[in-house]
Image 1 (cartoon, rainbow, N blue to C red):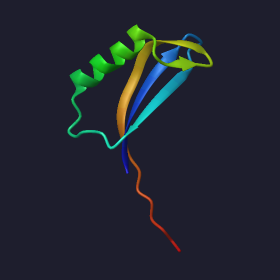
Image 2: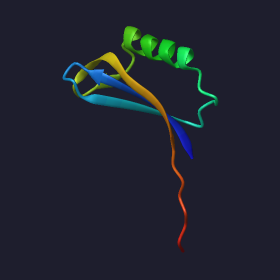
Image 3: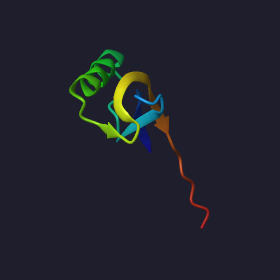
Image 4: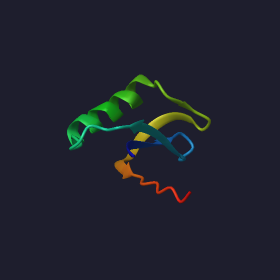
Length: 69
């Protein structure tokens, strides 16, 4: 299963990750950048370490699970 991880830094310098399942591919870097800027500007996400203050990274994570039994 693939997911898009948006990583931000909060006021205490800790990483806050927002994960979105089934991202559209190929990823549009400009659109992701704009969305992350909007999340920060509108202060719509709260974290235990305070407000989100900057972008850290965005990445697509592909996780494969193989059932043994």
